Length: 427
Ligand code: AMP
Ligand code: GLY
Image (cartoon, rainbow, N blue to C red; front, side, top):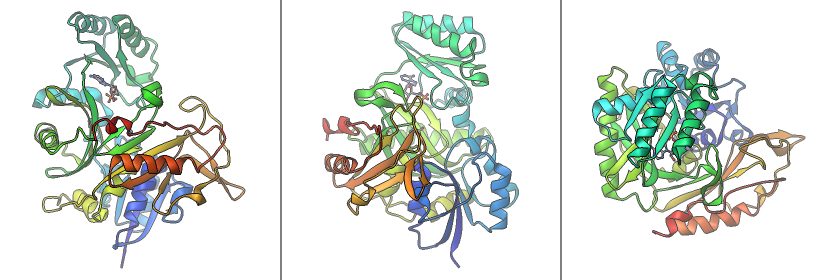
């Protein structure tokens, strides 16, 4: 009999996971909680919120789920993996203690320091005056300062300060005005690193790992990295900067020591290791870890994985990744996010989406903020969908994907026109 899976989440990342897992020969049925309209042909959507760990656990028990795959970080930090394991349920995702690698910057930075994992110099403060003094020292040394709230702040608790005044303002807003609530009780001030950013994805079973791919995200809303930060406006795989040599140094200097450090701390890491790296002239340095796949990075990673994903995730969940390999497709994938006008600020919902029936067969659309209203697909979120194309090269994927984007329409649709363009100068 085939296997039953539960994918937790409702975004484009989870649509991509469902899409990939649905191709597995071993799968009989996929449930998505709460899912989205894009997944409905591949999965049965069940109306349980991602934070409702108890209800998800009950659902998995009652429906004899063979493996649960967790998309977003919130249920991980709430201990979904611990709860499922207590009940003898297989789950792919780290324990709450291991998810601190993403959930607490103070935890992860102290871990990097203790185990010699390369990262920006930093200090953790619970006192605003001491934080200001350290920021001042960094500016005097000509390094620049980055100010970060300790807890989860939906990617918005980071200020790359251009001047001491800006650093001071960020410290006050996080610590005194509590812009991010309790996430700002502790604050990190760190050295500003120079270089190119790269995301690296591996899967770990607690002691062994499988390297997948690298990708670059585009966090700002407007072309040329202008405007406010978003969840991510587009991504592409294996940028030219990602050479075999760089891959080996990321594995040796960052990934292996992190897995060993988590074991030594008594919280072995099982799940996705998503390292946000700055590739500096002195080698890769970790900006942050995430305990999950990226969104929209997952939307470009999944089509690049040739192997069946299910045995890989199962082996990781069971701690048996040692002899598992992964085959990656040649070429590259580029994904462009279509967002509602006004995002990341306030935006309209309920606008009719047209043109999806005009797309080429090879084009993949991963839906995120969509809904069905009067039998029509309408917008229902800030990031509405990602349009993804795989091709022999990044440049071929870029020209194809933008041809496809132009066929899609909804009122006030916005997207970046320069996704992956940075790679062309180097390809
Ligand atoms: P984080 O959430 O820590 O990854 O920070 C969000 C973004 O801020 C990163 O993707 C970088 O663009 C930037 N950033 C964070 N830390 C640093 C740093 N030490 N030096 C330069 N840029 C940084
Ligand atoms: N795209 C960035 C993230 O998923 O955190």
